[in-house]
Length: 122
Image (cartoon, rainbow, N blue to C red; front, side):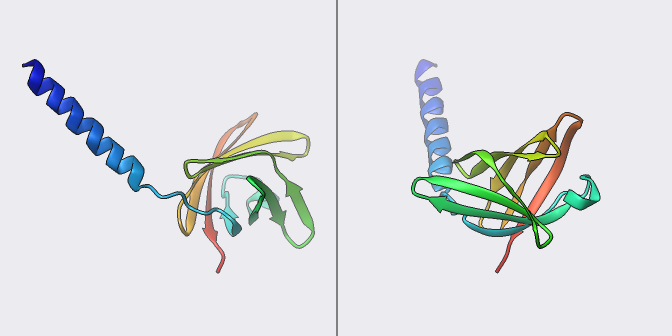
């Protein structure tokens, strides 16, 4: 019985390891058009511009032609991008999963959490 249990654990670990290793790190750099339909109108759509500066990433959110917000606490690990922006003195924490051509995640602030989606611009 112990041998069967051991073999099952080994097989489970091996299959999990192959799934994890099959996930390639996606390059998040570029310009992404985002939508957050539940956000106030003036913040509900725009661009997220992601760049790499050495080993670190930078993020800037662009609303319209002139309003730009630089993100703080930018971290990109295992295809998940997290950062903080300030809108009207309120910290908004974004946690977004990056795929090849799309991003999906949430923006959390004092009144709750809203969904955010984005598509990479060509």
